[in-house]
Length: 303
Image (cartoon, rainbow, N blue to C red; front, side, top):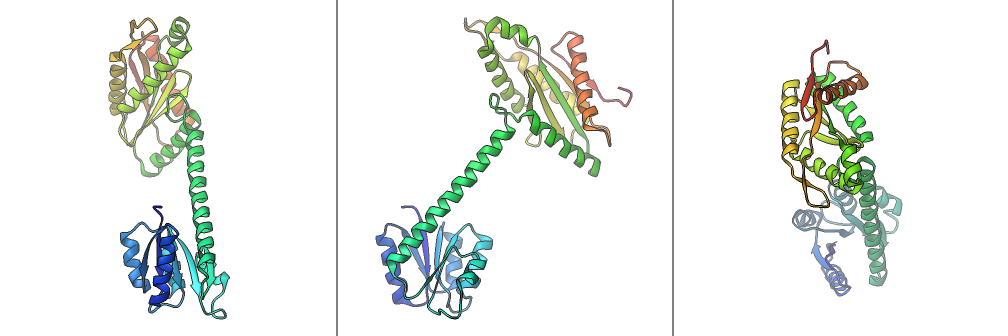
């Protein structure tokens, strides 16, 4: 097993016999005779569970438990031989995962250790599942870009920051030219491949602080924080040019050119989010009306 256990007890015979038993059970274990020594070990090793006596020289086991739970993702099993001085509730309130009385029956300790490790694994699986569900809830399943619901959530956050700090913010809205015709000619499976490829191309043209979204169907949006209108236009042109150079093929392996029309706009202070998005949409339709495969910008207050 890769699980590492740290045993802390100032009684050397107890510490050594417990260490031997834990290792015979198949775990890797280390030992310390004080909290101070234990903290040095915690800084150097990937410990999953600490088994500590309460009565220690210097920092006691409960103080140590409190510190460990604040600083590390480590479970703690507390031991005490002083039945009347410390309670289960007190140990748990410090963050202990379990509490056993000395003299400790090693078989009982092993059962408690296994339970703590099992619960630890279940917690990790639960956190992983929640993170996965969260990602699914904000991600478009086809392109792996963020979805439109998350777009509005993020855009509102960026607008708040723009208003609070008076920082520039720009928005792009992209649409694939004649995509319905492409789908009708080559099928939706081929169309899906175009959407996936386009998502990758868009992301490759952005900075870390920028974010791309599948807005719906063949439409995409890009949020550009800390970006004025002319800079946004340059980003849009970079995306448009790179898409035009991409080589798409149908089932007959014939090369097909895909183009996109883009609208770019910059946020106006205290503007409503709907107006901001609608202006980007309007700019994108200007590109469509002017012949497609181009970038149009609406930045001025008169636009």
